[in-house]
Every structure is written in C-alpha cells, then in structure tokens.
Image (cartoon, one colour):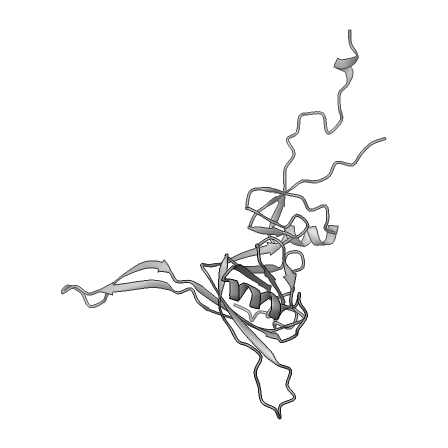
Length: 71
Length: 149
C-alpha cells in the first residue's frame, strides 16, 4: 500500500497558528493539515506560505530496498 | 494605478481578549468599536546656521492605546467582568482584532502585553433606551500584525 506524501509548507510572514495557538515566524515550517486545499492555495497565492522543496535523492520518491536484501 | 476593489468595512471584524496572550476569548458579540491611537515615533529637529531646513532625527516609539467599546452585561465570564477584574488588579491584558474576521490568510492585529489604563462603568440617562455601553483602554508597547492560518 502506498502512502501519499504530505506537502510541507514554510511561513513567509509572521503567522498565528490557530490550531496550535502560537506564532510561526517567517522561515519556519508550518503545519497546515487543519486547512482545506482551497485555503492553502489562497495562502500560497497571497505569499504567506510556500511549499518546501523536497531534496531529490534520485529515487523519484521510491524507496530502494535492494541493499537491505543482499547478503 | 487603478482604483482598488478590495476595500473592506469592519462589519465582519473579530475582536478577542486574553489575560495571557495565548488563550483568547471572542468578544465580537459584545464589542461595538475598536479605536487605536498613539504609537508615534518620537522625533526631534535642530537647525544650523547653514541651510534652510531642519536636521531631523528619530527616537523611540510611544505606547499604543487601544480603546474597545463593549455592551455592558453582567455574566461573570462576559467582557465587562473580565476587563473589570484585570483593571482593578492591574494585571496583564491583551487585545487582538481581525478586520476581516480572522479566517485563514486574514490579518490579525495583536497587542503586546498591556495594562488596562481606564474603564468606564455603566452610566446613562433614565429616558434613553440605548443599550448600556462601557469602554476600556489598553496601553501596550506595540501592535503585531500576523496572518491567521
């Protein structure tokens, strides 16, 4: 069974996180799982958050287990 | 530049108060107005014999005063009682408001830790049918703008 990877977001301005009851400063990662996709899209469009770019390790998201199966 | 189509009124404004800056109580159903004053940056000037205009320098910002008018009610957890308790104790108090209502992406303006400088007690005239309003003024070092998420 494959599990969809959650997108990660980073604040671009000072945010008040209503679910966590705390400020999130610009540059900090922010959990937006309590918001709808539409709300998140508006936040991105407004320049308040941005998607954290995942580092590509060349596996295209697939986990290579072959090493663990050898020997 | 084209005329904006994004002007708002305060009809959906959300007003909240807190005694600790982290747990907030929505008093939008009681609050009737928010006024903000003060916060000017101190400036000074000097003139020299040379030139025709002043040398202007900047100093610190003065405190901000936030005045909130609320409907007077007598419930123990309602705004008048909460504010009155903080006023009489001289204890910490916070106010924040969101002009558009504080939904995701909308701005919040949050006071720093402040002190309630003044509170009006219920007053009025016998012939008036107006709901009784009271107001309090919070003095705070600054206001922080953030976006709700």
